[in-house]
Amino acid sequence: MNSIARRTQVLRSQSNIPTAAAATFVAAGIYALYSSYGASSSTEPKKIFGKGPAFTSLKLHSVDTLNHDTKRLRFALPKNAVSGLGLTSALLTFSRPQGQIFPVIRPYTPTSDLDEPGFVDLVVKRYPKGKASNHLHSLQPGQSLFFLAAIPGYSWKRNEHENITLIAGGAGITPMYQLIQGIFKNPQEKTKVTLVFGINSDRDALFRDEFSQLEKRFPGRFKVVYTASNPAEGSTFRKGYVSKELLQEVVGKDSSKVFICGPPAFEESLLGASGPFGKAQGGILSQLGYSKDQVYKF
Image 1 (cartoon, one colour):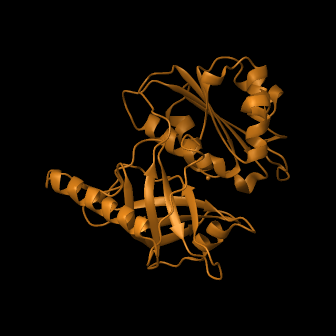
Image 2 (image 1 turned 120 degrees about the vertical axis):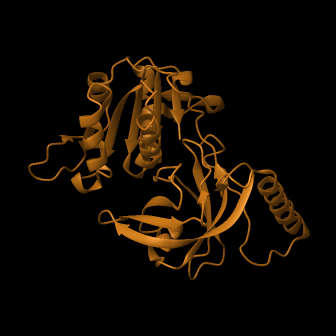
């Protein structure tokens, strides 16, 4: 899977909604979308996701199995359309898993090129008890997924930071990958990026080939450091967790901005547990001298 109450949940049903308030909300959303499309130039590609609700279904085009519990789901966009998403955006999905009374709403970060027409990719890790992830993994090409809206993330400005550090745990790599793509596809961007990726084992190193290619193309600007709690025999990865010692060694205090994303326990170790009045205390990043303003959590 933040800035809007942890990828704020918006509820809307694919079929009949029994309340007049919900019907009014839906009608208003449809009218807003129709108006915005009508006002745009006919020569511009249609943007599927913009400000406000999207309320759209996209058909699953293809599925790639990335490892034992993760799939890349490619959804087809309408002809001559682009996603319309900005860098660090996520998509709020709405699904009705089989056997579930209530629908499930979950945010997922697209990993495809946001400016590429034709499709949008979601990389989804399946959790044993994950209602949404199990449902998405069960989808077959030709079936559809309903999308409620786009959720904006960090407002990235070109060359605002000289050095940044991205710290990801497990499936938290997806927003980092999206940001990395956006930075290194821009020829005017000069920002240096260090990625610290904490995983369980070697097979969890998603986008490993892509990161390796970036390190070769941008030596001195991009570096990735893996640490695995249970590395495979003969692994080249460090053994262990994302610790204070590791971050002190590979990052130190050089970054002007730190981005983090991962499981709750992973983020708590970096940010600290919530103390009185909701203020986090005792996190690794504060111990390293990073202020609250220097850290962004997806």
